[in-house]
Length: 231
Image (cartoon, rainbow, N blue to C red; front, side, top):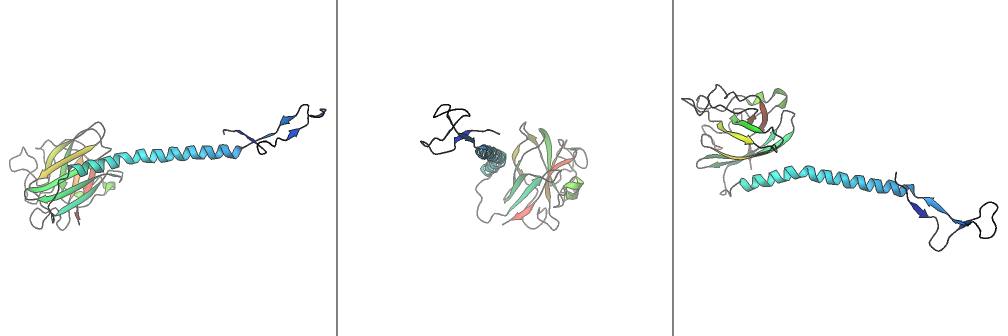
């Protein structure tokens, strides 16, 4: 540990030790003692500064993402039905959030996620409001399709009400997006995302080809958020 010297007595009151065989003031040396406790305190202060700095840096991505999502959201009329969700990954860790607002033209969905693999990913609404990470989010069921349509924008008789465009994740692992789904609602009635068993938003490992049945050959489920009524 780092050590430093400290005077054992107040300034101006210097004690002297007589060397063996010395006489008078010959060979007198000022006495010092080591302040080891000061070294420990200094080390603790440095460790605390490092810990606080690390905590601040780790908080930046979440704070920045929250601000970015808030920037995407429009000013909504009073009384607008809204919903929200928290995304978790296959480890059960929270990695993002979703905000949903019912509009005269459908549901406006705003999402922000982090720690994702870069690339193009399928992005759907699923039929059940359950996100169990242990089962790979199979608990969310299939695509939300209350009208019985086929999957895919490129298929005759498509698409599912829960089908939405693919989303691009950048090299930084972030996804910030706003999507309008005009086939669903947050109000009571047909195609409500807040029906008896709820619904969920799911992000897949691969892109949706918009034609393969039943889910566009989009691979595993890497993020899931239960849609919950807000307010």
